[in-house]
Length: 288
Image (cartoon, rainbow, N blue to C red; front, side, top):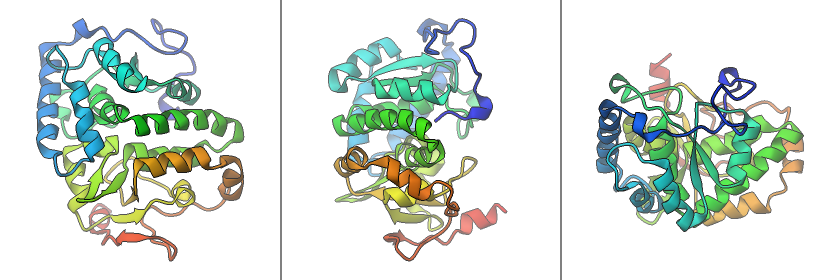
């Protein structure tokens, strides 16, 4: 999701009207490719037994003919054949209407820059590793691919209804920081988790965060953190159910009910919640 405080009001010089730019794969340095390879190897070793089966299957789509950072053209060819999606390069964060339009038309926008070697563990603005390693494997799953396209269509409507804040929370707690209940136990699928070495462990293993069964209305009312590990994760039962709820819900009356109401705090556990894990919040308190 775009952060309006860091987005220009018009495409920068050299960008197309839809904010896309050439990836220019040839411009990456050997250090850039080495950074990708370090990050990829570290996460690929960590994620089996932690990431969802859909994500792990989707990792194969990133194993391309060139070393290092994926070539978006080759990646898009493979992805389009699977689910109709493609990956397009953008210079950074883009306006919300541009973001949603690309998503509704099965184009995933990805930054074409990569973090420095001294930023392996944290980068506030999403780079090509977060965008591609974090998001693209899930786009190889047909059901999740349909969910993200439906979300893009819903985003354009949310802009018209003045409910972007509420819909953004759905993206945050599913696409970015979602957990899923699989037969073997809880697994991660959100891109913000799978692309983070530390949060891949924290989200599943630490006693600190709440883990609560997914409820769309609840999620849309819940605040979130952008500066540290999440204090609450929401757990879906399946991608099929997430897609079904998204396409079958009339969001207009839901927005009318919740817009303007107080936000639910990030650490709250409500009486109606399906509590999978009631967190100690020890980590968050230690940071105060």
